[in-house]
Amino acid sequence: MLGVIGGAAIDWAMNGRLTPWLLLMVCVAPAFVWGLIEDLWKRDVVLPRLALPALGAALGFVLLDARLTELNIPVVDDILVVHAIAFLFTVFAVTGVTHAVNVIDGLNGLAGVTTLLAAIGLALVAATVGDAFIFSASLVLAASVAGFLLVNYPSGRIFLGDGGAYLVGLLLAELSVMLVHRNSEVSPWFPPVLLAFPVWETIFSMYRRRTRGHSTARADALHLHQLVYRRIVRWRGFSADPRDWTARNSVASAYLWVIPAVCLLLALAFWDNSRALQVIGVSYWIVYGLVYRAVVRFQVPRWLVLRAPVPMLDEDQVTNMSSKLPR
Image (cartoon, rainbow, N blue to C red; front, side, top):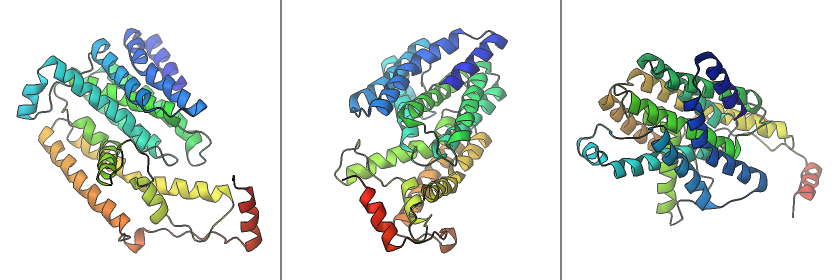
C-alpha cells in the first residue's frame, strides 16, 4: 500500500492526476483495511470478506465508471445492456478476482509473480491504446509488487497476507474493468486470460469442494500449488532446518510461474481478438484439468519431479523436535 501511495504521489506531481487516484484508493481501502484486521487479529468472518471487496467493486462502478457491459457473446451482451444486471455482474467479477489472488497466495513468490506479470500486461495494452491513467496505475502496481517480491522471494521474510492480497487483487480487477470499458478495442476476454491462473483456480476449487459435499468457502489443501509442493517438489528425508522448508516452498513456486507467464504472452498476442481469447480460455481449462488429474494420480513424468537430497534426522533430533511441538 505504501508503494502504491508513493507511486500515486509521483504520478500526481508529474502529470497532475490526483482525482482518479483518490477515487481508486477509496474503492480499495475497505477491503484492504479488513484484510489487515484479519492478518493482525486473526479474524475469520466470511461476510466481511465477501462484502467489503463487493463494496469496493460497487464504488468503482459508480465513482470510476468501472463496469462490464459486454462480453462479445450475443445473448449475454443483450442482457448486460440492462444497467442493474451490468452492475451485479461487475460486482461479482471484481469480487471474484479479488479473492482469486488470495486463493493462490500459498507459496513464496507465487501470487507476487502472477500479479506482477498481470500488471505489466495491463500496462502494455494501456500504452498501446493510449490510456495514460491505466498505464501509470498499472506500472505503479507492478513496481509496488516488485518491491514486495524483493523481500518475499525466496526468503519469505514478508507475506502479502489477506490485506495485501485483497489490495492487489482489487486493484488488478478495477484497472482491468476500466481498461476494457474505456477502450472498446480491448477485448473483454483479455483480463480473464491474463488472470486465468488465479481465476480458474478459484472456480475449480469451488466446484471441487461442492462435489465433495463441502461448503465452497471451506479451506482445503488441494489447490494445484499445494499439490505441486507435496507431490512434485519432493525433498528426500526430513530436515529440522527452516531454510530447507523455505527452499522447497520457493522451488515449488518457481515451477508454477510458467502458467502466468504463458497466459501473459497469449493475452498480449491476442488482446483485441475476443474469439481467439475465448478459444485460449477454454483450452486453458482443459489443460488445467488434465494437469491437475495427473498430479493427483501421481502420473507426472519422472523428469518433472524434483528430489533434492536433505539430510535425514536421527532419532534424538526427531524426539527433540517433537517435544517442542505445541500440544
